[in-house]
Image (cartoon, rainbow, N blue to C red; front, side, top):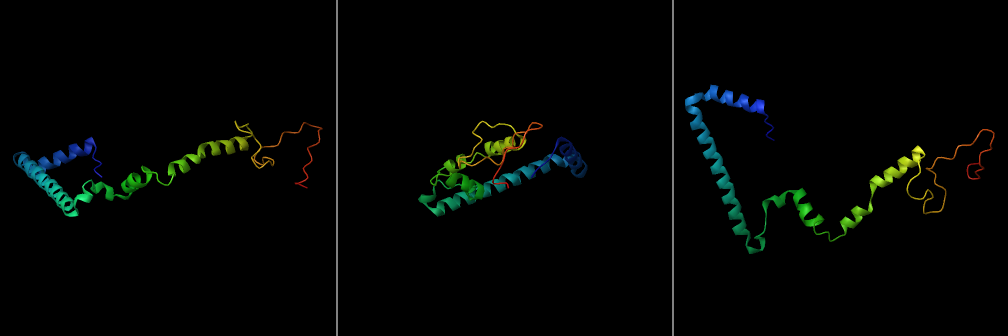
Amino acid sequence: MLDIGPMKLVLLVVLAVLIFGPDKLPQMIQNVSRTLRKIRQFSDNAKQDIRSELGPEFKDFEFEDLNPKTFVRKHVLEKDEYGLKEIRNGFDLRSDVAEVTDAVNGRETHEATVPATGGPDLLKKPQRVQPGERPPFDADAT
């Protein structure tokens, strides 16, 4: 949110000196810091009031848990009651993509080229036929 680089910061300081003057600038900084401190204190007091009103069963309640990403990470992914880590680890997308890429490029993969179904590997490029040699007969293709 505050994407302020060094040049922008220097520009803001110069503008503050020009607008408020060097005499009033320290007083303005004190007023702004006092206001920020009051806002922070008000927020902390409101959080304490909410925690005290919720009761002892919510003593470990954190307001950051209201963020949906944090809630999912804390309650679903860390507990893993449903075996999500096992499911997530079962999908090895990189190796699957590497196998398909190797098959398309005609390179041998580290695993067997015949799939578990026992049929021919359709992604594997056929071997090149030498000049004068007949290509192999494929009954399914004719």
